[in-house]
Image (cartoon, rainbow, N blue to C red; front, side, top):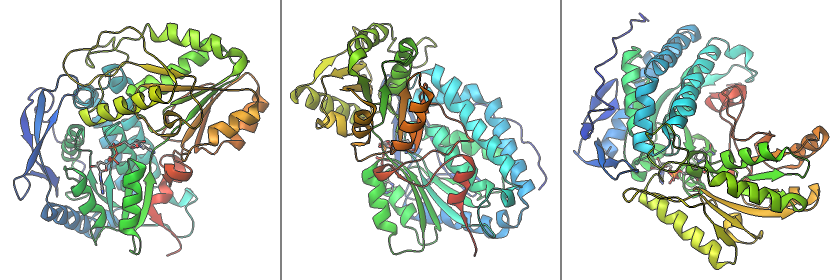
Length: 479
Ligand code: NAD
């Protein structure tokens, strides 16, 4: 490889809104073959941001073919050290263009700029840096005998962390020598398309990364394509199960990162101010559009009243509004469909007898908004204690003993994450062992790092992303 840096293109993506975007196939932007397109809107204002091409089956075919050719002719023949250089360059360009990405992410997704600027984009770059380092050290990653890439990977991602989910998917796939066709969610395609520009800028060989935009049908065509060797999906449990059915009986491998209903467990010996911050971060970060959100607060009975009081006082200080305002704590709900789902489940919570509370806050008249909401008096059988709401809604339950906390925490179909707040180290270790959750945080919540594996138990899916373990999903061993 030559490793020529292309100059940064004229920045058209962020400010030149309402323009149209093609698919990224074989290193070029191209309109969809049928000419179909869809609009992506700002959830904060309902303004149209851009017109995006909708990939047809023929486009999926072209993207998979480009990925196959790039795999066979270029990427599988390249040394790990050279693949790593490309990943390092992508990481650096993401850092250089971080502001542009952060603004575009907040516009398209509705999340506060403080989060996209300080969390999403830096973590996406960190993910590429981390995997760049692995590309020439795979022999030392403990992946088993003779690890080989699968070939062409089909990847489908959700809308809650668009660029970050893309980097969780693309970085390990490329580091291990696979090529990729990725479909972003239909409500948040823009940072994936800006990422395609980064691939051009990094001089990545054409076809190594292909981005096709479209709705569920495009994702279905991708995961069902006969020349895709491996499927990596992040999204809802319902679609994950549909994908598992689609690929059953084929040679394809899959990793599925699905929903969650995490318990955030507060004991009476916890530093309560810190715990309240952790509860707020756990469920109101990214408007609760987080698979591992601490959506169930389990609080020990002896401190339940005090925690609820402190929580309400803290929530009254949250600023809900314009995602592009640096002072905003809680932004817009990503889509009308998601807003309807949250509204419906919150109504169910009331109908089932839980007490609903929200701080006073003035919501903008346009766009999709939902005030931070807390339900107290929730019992385990309530739907708001069992179903993923994927919004800024917290269900509060109480417990008396550690054993009861474990039983309640594990009593959902999911098992993605959990949080424990206590002063006792021995209790942390015991609880972490008992909780059926892929990630357990102690005296913190929503901490992410590319070196740590992330993934679920039960209906939260299978496979891990991040860390050495995440590489395992992209290689076959002992071939
Ligand atoms: P979703 O399942 O509706 O959509 C996810 C993606 O799948 C989108 O790109 C969509 O277009 C595509 N899709 C829809 N139907 C498809 C089909 N039949 N075949 C192939 N692709 C299809 O989920 P969503 O609403 O975008 O995201 C929210 C869900 O994602 C939540 O349940 C959340 O918990 C989960 N999530 C999980 C993780 C994790 O790491 N476990 C991370 C983020 C989000």
